[in-house]
Image (cartoon, rainbow, N blue to C red; front, side, top):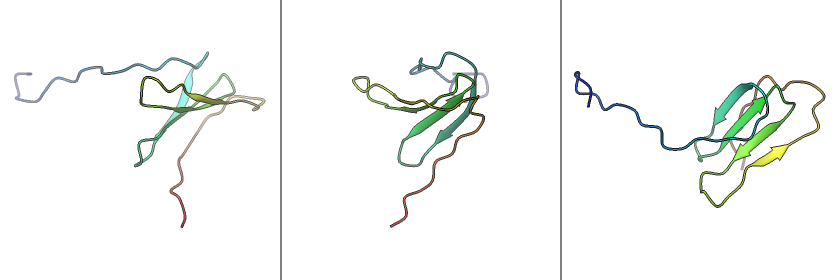
Length: 73
């Protein structure tokens, strides 16, 4: 615990998959994490260790921003 009574942050998990700079991250209220990168890809990450990320390819240049839209019913 720090001197101000606030808990020190701890690294719980790291994610590896992009081959270049990560340019954007979006976190949805439903627990989804999406990243985009200069490696021309977007990745949707799974939070359980047995799940692999889903990598979306096909962009011809760097992907600079990503967002998550809520489901419309």
